[in-house]
Image (cartoon, rainbow, N blue to C red; front, side, top):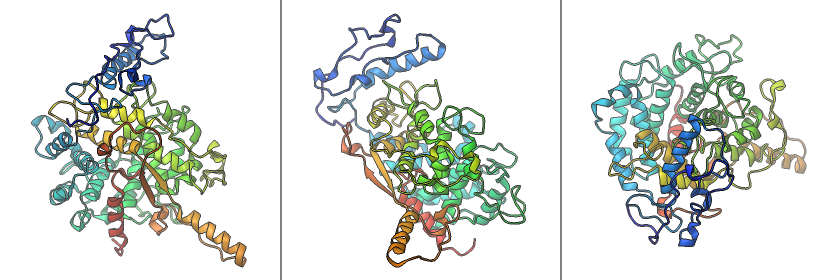
Length: 523
């Protein structure tokens, strides 16, 4: 790897949490060291076993101890053949990761036949990761378009491969892949009319979506459907064949989605895949993504979720000394949750910092006012980051990079790199390195109207925006800036390309696809 910063002599990291006496609440003095004394600025939080541990030894706690043991040497600056900077952080090995991802887009070994139904995901994972590493992926446009055509079904949607059943997850991955490579040839692959009819057939009366015909209904389906509807700018009215269709036209594709998301929040504060199930980090991202597309996060998230409890649950997913996130309570840290959990915080911060509700304005009524959450009350703004960006960056750069010639990014030390983790680890790195500021055209319009009323008297009533106001033209714009508050422990050359906090692809790719279909009349 290329050298960044002045090479330092690093002290050995503590070998194991087992060094700590089970009868003592203090760390053994032999392993309590301060790396700053050696010229390397690594906070003690990332170089020592956790200061608080459950005295009850279980299989889970033992595996957690083993995870800490393999992470501590890397977090303490003891990686193999790696040059660390003055903060004890290695560089992002772009060249090696890029090479790995291009190889993953080529012909794969025979053992990957078991993952044939995940072919659209391999496209998205690799293309998205390459884009974040500043690679131009337009050279894949024709091959991606041809592959997507082979997976599209006449009934609508995309399967995992040719002659496979259309599924919401694989359709989501294909649509994002087409957006990443861009261009008319890619956009025209999607049969929008068939897609609309297929989504109508999956829409359920309770507001959610099945992931495939006859399949399970969960929050993944709701998020994927909302993204697809938004990117392809599909009409919202329902086909008569839809299970949710009503003769009076009072129900559309997005009716009830917010209420379905609300029912998935658990007693812990996290979000489950279905009502009354276990909270999971990826479902939290899906829930927030849904709500952020239904309306401005300052209104929608506060309306349907108990935000303080959700923040508490998400914050509890970040561990020390590792610095990364777990996906569920009492589970291990995993690099992919750098996105699934870390990617929730930009949406939460947009909710808290909104001028359209985050600072105490009345929250919009949920579809059932009796179910309005505690988040309807005044919420303070997020003046500081709601998670440890330094901790996540340290975990990603120190522990998630495959240091062998293979390249790519991984779950944790001891695991092999793969396309899935390469994508979502880099997405999490983007969240940690950037901040998002969201404007609100509707709030600005209301302020202008109020000003006009004060100066010129009453103004005519204005119709309210329908669900998913971006489809009606009042699209909010995310401004993306480097996060510069506090200590920056990585070198500027290691900053990755930012992605849209809802779609998880660059905002330019989102805008280009939506603008293309905005100009279309009908299907």
